[in-house]
Image (cartoon, rainbow, N blue to C red):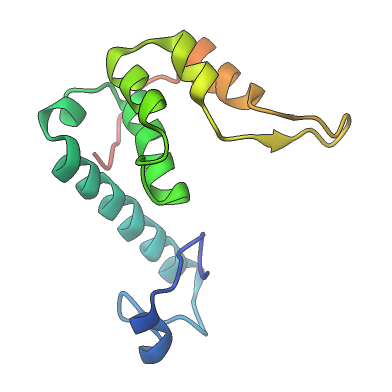
Length: 131
């Protein structure tokens, strides 16, 4: 991987380039461009797959889907989570959410960050959006 989690394709490894950039010598701006391009690609993939159902979502649920698409490679392994997200079924979303972190103090694996930041605090829609 390069930049901010861009998984290199076989073609990129052979060419040595990601979106036209030499991935062995990236500036911070170039790494940011790669990240933005990857997020836009994830967004476009979700539009292609879900159409108006995705387009009509609020930004926080779009962000969750983009997270899965970008970081986990898609939603095919998470059908219950995806269905719950589109139905805005928070209880099932929490039960099916598979993004965990290890608490440095307790060593416990949990998804508390997701629960607090996304579901309880209701991340506000940003004025600028890539969607």
